[in-house]
Image (cartoon, rainbow, N blue to C red; front, top):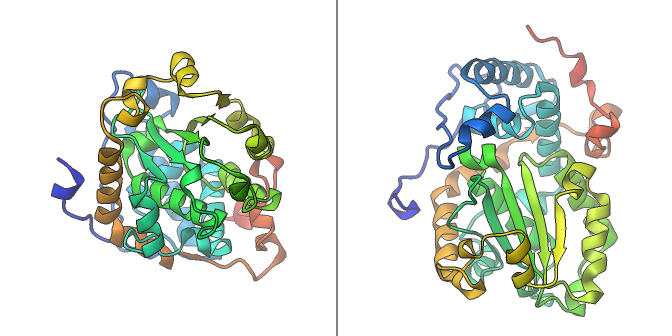
Length: 333
């Protein structure tokens, strides 16, 4: 069934402790090795049930989370991304909520009908491919040079990528198998480089490292001009080692598909089967289908300004560095 034939999903509750929790969540299907993937995640019915309860108890008792989704589709994004480690999953959720407050330009009004987002979708700035990899990974392509530096900033790029992540974040296969990001840098110019700063890269890296509920399986930069390698190197140097090991740079798509990727999955314009326009159309339909749910995310809230432990800077600190908030002191039944 295509996205255009589906009915929009109901808007979820944002109450911290609703009378009834929404446990409706689909099982991931597709790749032949899905059972192996679930085993790597340590997922099973009992583990899932216990961890959902623990996350919900934690949210309900959290003194600074004001409004947050507690439905299974949402919470499984964090549990699956962190292989059911409650501590790390809860930290990631906390930092995800903080990032929404700290970077409203990235997260607020993820509306495909917004003129800027709609235009970037129309020109194919970023879009997911229709087919998954053999392992079930969702693959996205960003043609970064299509971002007009006279009209847009790096925040528009971030916002567009967040729209994509949120629109597909509830898909159980995306949650379990993860995603691969391909950046085509062929059309990047000096003007594009002028809208990117080291400070902006640091902000992006902090969110990817600490607040992004996604299993990152690969980040590939292709057709990178020599003058733009500092962008790739700068971002990579700021990422956690686990993600850094999954980054690779390729001279062109011939080299990329020969060494790393099935060319048939790419758009026809890159040597694949399906025209780019079809991939783009499916993305727009998905963003429209999830529009009300995406807009409701704007109402989630966490108090960042009441004490030092939950200051804006503390919540952006590196999880792996051991910086954690007072939620560790919360007693869970």
